[in-house]
Image (tube, rainbow over all chains, first blue to last red):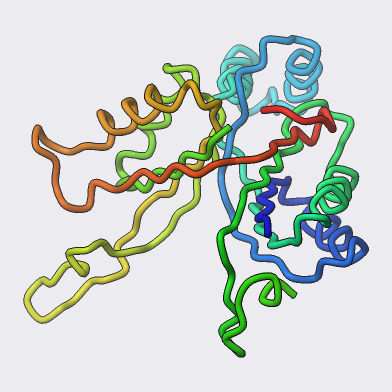
Length: 139
Length: 108
């Protein structure tokens, strides 16, 4: 018995739910969470992102220097971004399939910030309605 | 690989995250939660509070970093020299696999 914790983009919640159903897993628990990733030393992700944000800056409201400061502060890897944290219980043998489905549904072109998946062991589970425990309680 | 779940006071969240980042643990997930501890909540006169707001910080780490991250959280989240009820808890559990979605591969 395993617990799969997947942290995904808010916008990808629907796609993840569909992918889970296609993978044969209907049940999940999801909460809103804020998160940030590791420090990015590689500029090939940050530089285009900075250019794009600078292009969106309203220069008539604040001057360019100030918006550049804000964009740099936004991209310094310490900003917390909204994410959705899915928790899914699964049988051991289904884990690779579910992980594969979540990765497929959530991968984007951006190269960073698509999320993480963690697989952790679960000692036991109990279904409240019937009281059955162990593998029988998962689905 | 291990999972650190730290329940801290909401007002300590920013400080804990700042110190974690300075200690090399930039990646974290934060969830607002409510809960009570073994003091059964707080009673103020006739009013009883047992859903006290806390912040849950989730960090995945390599096994070797465990003592260092626990030390950072303990030092930062503690209030006053001897600590107070409600300063929080740290739970550590095993993680068997971790995947980075943007790379589509295993690893933190």
